[in-house]
Image (tube, rainbow, N blue to C red):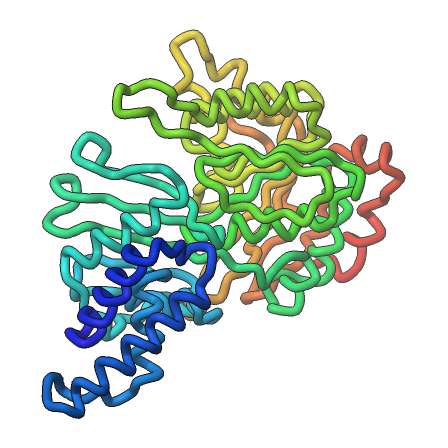
Length: 410
């Protein structure tokens, strides 16, 4: 932030406090105050009191951004091509466009970074301090914020903002982008209609949440859907929807609501379908118990491949306690999970479906048996010719996946 912008912004804040105006409720007032103070500043500059402004309109926009928005970062929030913003240090501010990172010319101070984070956290009611050096929160537009502060971070506050993208809301849009083939898209649409339990896997930033949104666009309109997340990220186009998120403990260490608790509570809400944003720890056991009760569901998991995702889902429930044994977990995963959709991202930032695998329902020792339905060959997602071993859900819904899978199998 330049000195003129900082000076004008301070004058606007003074007027706001004096007049008792709520800028959050009326951004037009902030814009008017900014224009008036820019004009006064320019008049003083003509008298030699200040250096003249090169761009009055641009200065007014910066002032408004610093008062009601996110200051120097606001242009990147407004740019639909920017997917992610992160701050490694005040002089190292990065953005990502189409999965490719760029170093910006933005230079902040430590104080400005802290003020930006505090402004972002106002909406969520969450906090970050020495007693709680990490925070996950949702911004008003649905973007996700993650912050780590020293002494957990080395010297500066580490800030990551994953912007909420409304561009992709259906499997058809993923087909248009080349992220999935029409054949695989139609197969997944059938699976969703049939109430299949789907595990979406992939590395960080491969589009797992976007895939969940796209998959749910094919759900039946009458389904009652309950979503459970650490912080709100999903944006489902569903008529009957309940969204739940975790809560951090208070300063006294009380009041925490975990993902495990939310999954249990979700089952009391008469869901037709349960969506868990991501499983990382012992909550995977509660998810498996829910799916084992006949409730259709979906979730995401970090993994290197579809088979690794199944292995990981067999391992995470063991974190729930010593009384949990793999002899229960592995067969449960084999019988509960119907499909694994694995995503990948290449060096150019292109996200795509890399494979779709269907567990057979059986297991060999501690390994879940699964057949690849779609795999990537020569850079293209193709059908293998295999069919899901379990077709009961498809049959019950009056759907025949063979009609889709028979086309172009290799």
